Every structure is written in C-alpha cells, then in structure tokens.
View 1 (cartoon, helix red, strand yellow):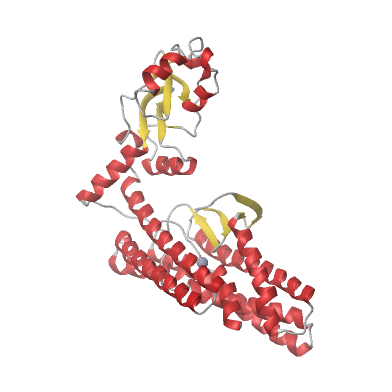
View 2 (view 1 turned 180 degrees about the vertical axis):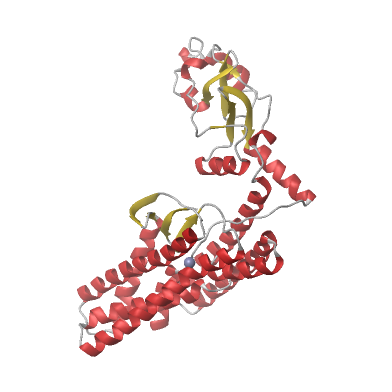
Length: 400
Ligand SMILES: [Zn+2]
C-alpha cells in the first residue's frame, strides 16, 4: 500500500515516518482550514493569520495522529508485540506490527489504546481552549487549540466505528474471537462488515457530491475504497498466514530447478534457456555449487556481439540474502520477502548448494488447494487507522 516512506524521527524506540501521500493530506488540511473552516469562524482575521492557523492546525493534527499510533504501539509492546514503526499516510496513520496479538485481550487493548489517547487529547485541549478564551488569549491560538481538541474527538469516534480494520472493527473482532475462539472466522465476519462500511462511505460520497460538496464527496469515496481494500487484504493476509506459517520452504520448493552452468556462453543461455522457459531469474551453478543468479537484466547490459564470447558465470550476480532462503525458512517469511521485494522466485540454498527454487506460483497453488480442502489453523495482521483525513473536508463542509 505504501510508496516511498520517509523516516523522520524516533520516539520510545519507534521509528516515525511519513508516506509521500501524507503531503497531499497536509496541503488539503492546511488549505481547508485556512480557506474554509477558520474564515467561517473568524471572519475578521487577516489572510496571513488564517494560513498560519491552517498550517498550525495541520501540524497539530500530525502530532495528534503520531500520539494515537504511539499509544497503540506502546500497548502492543506491553503485550510483547514487535513494532516496525509508525507511518503517516494520506488517510491517517498506521502502526506496523510484526507478530499478531496473541489473544483477544491483547487485541482489544492494543486497538482501544489509540482512540482512548485521542479522547484524552481532545479533553485536555478543549479544557485548555476554554481556559485560554477566559484568560483572553489571542483568538487565533484559542481557535487552533479548540479545533485540535474537536478533531481529536472526531478522530476517536471515527476510529471506533466497527469497520475492520479500523480500531473499532478490531475491538469487535477481539470480541468475536473471544466468543468463538476462532480468529479466522472473527476476521471473516468483521472484514465483511468493514466492506459494508466501505459501501456506506461510497453512498455518503454520492450524497455529498449531489449536495455540491465536491471535495467532501471525493474524500468519502476514497475512504470507502480504501476501507474495502484494507478489509479484504487483511482477511486475505490472515488466510495466507494461517496456511503458510510453520511450514518450511522445502515443502513447496521445486527440487529439480532449471539451472545454468557457469561456463555456458550468454548466446547459448539466451537461445536454450530464455527462449524456452518463462522464468525471470536463473540459478547459475558450477560443479554443483550455486555461484549466482542471472536474469534478462544482466543480459541486456552486454552488447549482442559479445554474447558468444561471454560466459554466464562472468555476468551472474552474486546471490544475496534477498533472493535466497534456506530450506528450513518459514514459508510465510519467504512470501513476505517476495512481496516486499517484488520478486516471484527465490533460490533455496543449503550450505552453498542449490537444493531448489521457490516460486510464488507454487505457494499460491498450495494455498488455493488447501482452502479448497478447507483445513485450517489460527493468527492475525496489523493495526490500521484511516481517520484523520476524513475530518478536514467534512469540517469544511459542515461549517460552511
Ligand atoms: Zn488507531
């Protein structure tokens, strides 16, 4: 889901980063605050002041979301979950957790921690704004503080919708999991409900568009789409995980892979391998030992007239931990690595010897067969928030 992630800083050992899409949200929020929300509330303020307030509001929202995610992450840490980091993106934030909550209780507390934090911030800021107003603080400052208090409350409420994988959906799932002792079934039900919420947001988007609120309408559409996709992929990921986790790579690998001898010429390789098989990556071997990998990319770098005189061994790229696994590697980890690196084949190596090739196709074939037969064990994916963005344009339209 993420494009380029920019690491920013660390808090309590958690790395906070932003996705490029966040900049769009930042601009949208600053603009809607400066051009729509604050002018309606403070018609007498100068344009410059309004834009400074808009930027301050957007920055405050950034801090609010980080605190919300931090709250999830800290509670997750208490339950022994490993967190890779916090990333802010166009729809809010996400605390990326590696292993799943071990129990419904852990799931519940990790999920509820975010909205509780947002409610707490809301309460504090609203009180501060009230005191500030009574003390005669400058109007712009009080306005921004009040807005942030209000938006944090909205953030908490929105995230508590029982739309998996939003926080409320995860609380709901924890409840079903506790009730039925079946995480996969709980996820199936809650992600279905999450999908329905996605449709409801589409409808809301349509109503907004018909009412003439273009930005608000588009925003609801996007959130609906995002929620549907997130619900769907959370369930799919869980299915994959329950099926593959604990299974060694050796179970799925092809044990007689097509290999290329290092002494072969590139010309031979192109004619006899590339035109005959549709693999992207070929293991290169020399007397039974794996010496590297070769793909069309390395061939393209060699001038055509040099093909007969160049050996495959000379252009083979050394195998790295990125494209090799051991036969004992957990299949789920291998799949995650393929997904992360955007590759579909991995070399299976045991003490320098190539013992097989693992392909995405074989993994997926195994998955579909297993699902068809209907035999299943249990687990879960990561925590996800889709809150912040919804607030700004809606504020804009609500206040107009
Ligand atoms: Zn959350």
